[in-house]
Length: 406
Image 1 (tube, helix red, strand yellow):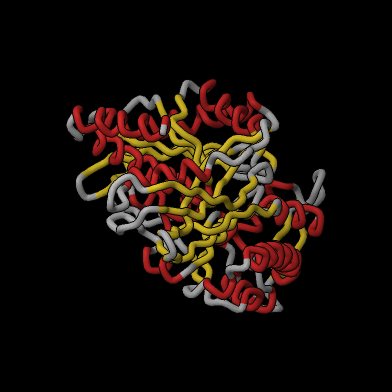
Image 2: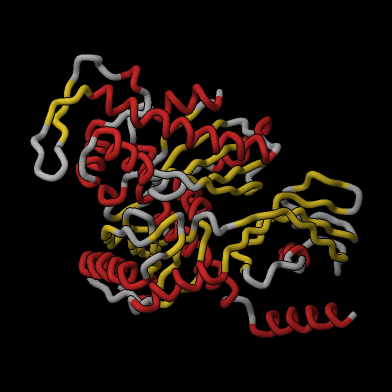
């Protein structure tokens, strides 16, 4: 296996670190290595303990390397959390020739990125929502169309510089070169959403440990992003307090018996709950456990609903809502979500092309697999550009330089 055929994704979450190694093939991506390690050193997407995070990354990396039989040197890293902010911007350029080219699209997006961004923030993504060519608006792919003036509405995602630097520092201390940082819900959407859903309009809710992230697609393009500082950790904390049981026991109870809608649970079913400080275990109605979980999930969905309404795009979400991430594995989340959002909802697992499918066929791996997918798309674009004749590349650069001067 050649190292340049490999693409790796590093998902640094609030409950675990996951490393997925993919091998690029002609038919898609084969998963060849997977590694995970518990991690409690992130809060709301921000590193609070560099040494502990580095150690978790190292453990997950070694496990993935052992499975794949390769030595990993570079990764795509996912970022999420409350330090991320997004806004819309517009760019306008003059068309050089008679028809719009892919280069023109890149130029107009770059023009939109020239807005003033605070010094403490860094641009992660500039994603085109739609285009306007002369007097014609509502265009989603202007390449090949004729016109003289191209305008783009662009969604720009920024992150706090120090938060991003600390995440990169942890990866580098684990001897991994960071090729790029990627918005985690964007990565997850590449792993779980169908093209038809994106075109018809959909909202992806990525239910993580420390945060719940939202992305909205309209007409195939990403149009809105947001993050809610509530996740699976908060559910676990509620259970530990409400049932008076240790955190580890609360997490296990949530995974084994948890349900987001208490009405779905038999009112007579009981479960054993471990006591604190050596106290004996006791029998508790399972419905009592679910009555602790339900308000927190409902609160989370209400926050997300507010973000969807804030976006002004709720009427354009034609295909409904897709849930992914570790928190989406709870029973009852679909039923509760449909009641709150009044939209059709489905749970999503990653779309894996081949390789070790069973090892990653879970919503908790959506982000890591999405990072591999994102990296593979970038790798293929880079290889495609390398195949262009050298003279063509240089002529394109000279034209760009002349246009900048004029």
